Amino acid sequence: MSSVKFKSFSSGSCGNCYFVGIFGDEGHRCEAGVIIDAGVSPRRLKKELQNEGLCFDDFGAVLITHDHMDHIRSLGSVCKHVGKPVWATAELHRALGYHTMTRDWIGRHRVVLSEGKWNEIVPGRIRARSFIVPHDATQTVGYAILLDDFKFVIMTDIGRMTEEALNWARQADTVVIESNYDPEMLRLGPYPPELQKRIRDGHGHLSNPECAEAIRAFRHDGLRHIFLCHLSEHNNTPELAYSESLDAAAGIALTPLPRMTASPLFNL
Image (cartoon, rainbow, N blue to C red; front, side, top):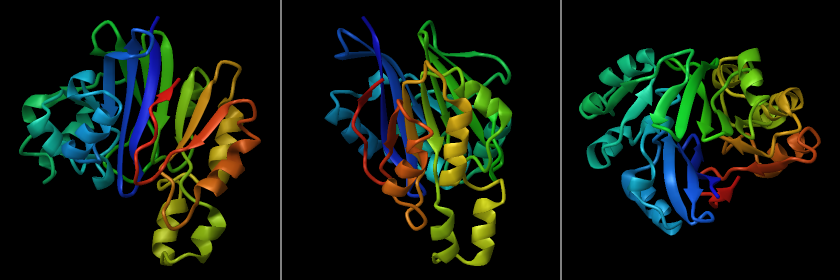
């Protein structure tokens, strides 16, 4: 019997990278997996995978959400040293083709997502489709991912919730959602007014109260896990993010993901 497992390698402005995969042999062997974003080095990625008894062969592709540095910092190195297909929208791939961190290495690994339809990422096992979310990058997408029949949704760096994002989350078994900042910590913190405005203007990041409101809107009986991602170092704490969404997620496993360190390998 197969199971689905999820791991965050890093989640925040220091770097973002996630793994989700299908495991057989009573959860002991990865049969198909994908990486989402490439904000950590191949060396660290290899080490963290080895800590879970995994290796580069256990994921078949990389999905990219957008072209900000904390999500693609190591994508060129991953292309050079790991050599997996890189899936992104046509618009994102145009940007990655010019970006200094990716342009020299991404060419032969480039695979364009067909928008508005399911894409066979790992044939027969993993499919994905993107949906646009508001954020001040070239283009930013969330992903709905089908691992056999398990529905996984990730939406990070989302300035405000959209109805399309809510609709995908309403169908999911697991949702990874941004809970970036506490409004009062942001107001009183070290960021200048211009940066504060950028964060909260609807094309920056999702606050803890906005995340909780979204959870209330998309929670449903089939939802098993919610992970809070991309917590701000200066404007949030795991305790604040967790407490803000706890009532909204009542009865559902709720976990803030660590910013700079890897999470456990969660059995979903």
